[in-house]
Length: 274
Image (cartoon, rainbow, N blue to C red):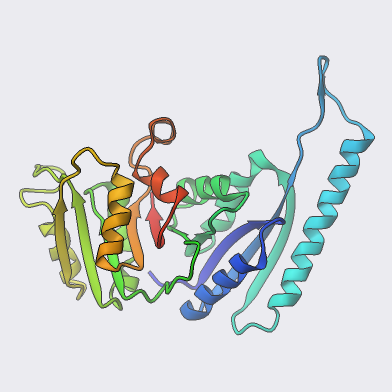
């Protein structure tokens, strides 16, 4: 797929660096940046008799609404001179509504950018990844060459989620110099990897003109996310392509998982789909 509209949500507390990173990605992709600036409303004060309103809380709401609008207009003015089209919308909502709003915006974009360390990272990722049908890109702390990476690493486990991520990344992988498929403890099976894990994936990508080197690695009791980060570093990958939350979200949040690990500390850009 090509990226013509790229969406990103930030909080009013996020700095300009993440905005600049998103603009650079959009400039390389020739895409429109749809930027959502979110102010998070505090919950109403409560008492033994239930939720109550007071002048202090009402004043905080008014101040927060004003702050969101001011930040949105400032970013709109700051980005007006950039070479790509940018639309900025500011909203002041409660935290429980962030995922729903992010999902709505993400459905009308080809890709959602999720910046690291943002105050709204978790709810935006939840909404965009699970409710939009579109891929997300976890941005690293440092620079990224997306959408023109030199080396791509696919974290392949033969799941529906990984398959969707690979499909969404085909246009990116076509321009890469190297593509690696990394399989952790793959097991030959009738319905998953097939008799030779990785070979069907390499054949599929080959028909798109993408030469893929397959690596089958043992887990040896190590954390899958840590293995993927180490292998990505060893291979010099500047983009990881993987499925998001193959297990239930609740199970991964309680017990951990490759997705949770990658979300917390992405060493390079991660294109993820569910």
